[in-house]
Length: 297
Image (cartoon, rainbow, N blue to C red; front, top):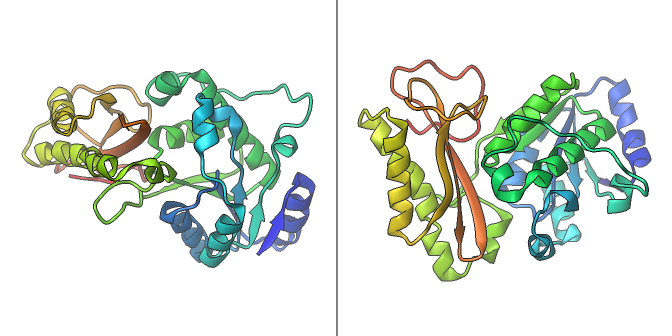
């Protein structure tokens, strides 16, 4: 696996593949690779001609300095895991390479970013995400870019970004990878104490509680949300938000008539975790494209 650190090196490494019309896949990461990231790389390896993985801890999307400082960093480990999963190329730029002196441009998607993660983490969070993703797409010019569905709102925002700016790349979201006990894989899980790790299981259990209500025939969004909140409260967790929304617009829905996206965020101790699930009532039309999360009903 080749490791490059500048945009010029990245483009030079990809140029022969582009000339040969090989499909170029990009898997953007911030490091601390886990099975969720590796599943994206393996999928790209199986479906695309060349697989590039970016490794960049983007400071502009962290609203809490302590969160950035605690983020795990081990490039040697991440590089070994990426290579074993099938990556051909690792792009590991410095902050100065991505944001050179005098950098003064930002990319912002309005309408989808002000709620949920945007409200909880501040407007600078999604501005940092959309700016760095736009830069990565322009740097690598991939044919397809893969994201994990755990970050459901991010996937919706990036799809809107690509559509609005006519960027020639296909955005694919792959299913959330979970621990054997159901907790969504995240680099933040390592920050949980043993007691917090056990309590965190209330998060996927809250999604299951809503799923069970859908299977039983419940369609009222308020009742489905209440089922999830009650399960969190039973474990002493106060959610930041739990909401059932339209999977494409993130607008709240009152009644589940088709696919609905249940989004959730909560702190367990000092660790903030997010998760989501797509709820599809029996007999409803299948979603027109893969949605963030996992169909639970």
